[in-house]
Amino acid sequence: MLEKIIIRAVESKDVHPWLLKRHYARRLCPISYAFGAFDGDNLIGVCTYGTPLSSTLRNGICGEEWADKVLELNRLCCESRKNLASYIVSKSINLLPKPKIVVSYADSGQGHFGIVYQASNFIYTGLSAMFKDPMVKGMEHKHHTTIGDEGRGHKSRIEFLRNKYGSDNVYYIERNRKHRYIYFHSSKTVKKELLKRLKYKIEDYPEGTSKRYDAGGDITGQTYLSI
Image (cartoon, rainbow, N blue to C red; front, top):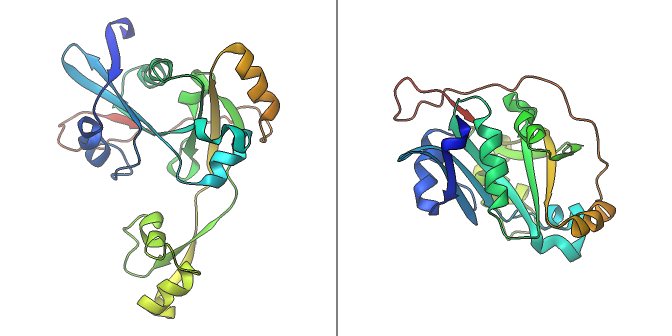
């Protein structure tokens, strides 16, 4: 029964093992707010929110005036119990200060459609733009942001990488397009204003069955849903 599951704020360090061992991305992310789902004393799921690094994203939802209110729901991982993921999302959002504009993505390349966000009454605003990222031969195991960050501060990141690793070893990979979902955590009056300012077109929910991942980690025989 979900009613006995308690959602409460936790320290960022408390969710690190989940992000590194149980979430499919297996890497940390910027965390401003972290929440845990507890069944008694057992932590059965985590959800984190952070300020998006991209100013283009922050400004591009409802304009620069509301950019500082944008949060990204950047990690969600929990035991594979019926409706648990959407329960964690809904309850954790209610614990955030108001007003906040929450954006989250469902990675189409991982077989995700955002069913959890649909169940939590997020607005669907379509797929992210097509984009290519630089990659270095032999470093495909690293995330594209890790590669790209090497050239941060240089006029041309791709030229920096080519000079460092050799032109023949640097190439582009197409980034997976992601389903973009938005939720306005605010009063009804503010929500009306934000809907007027929303720069994305509201679209019908995509259909599909999201994949579940046995991320394993140090838990034997347990299956986890991570998005």
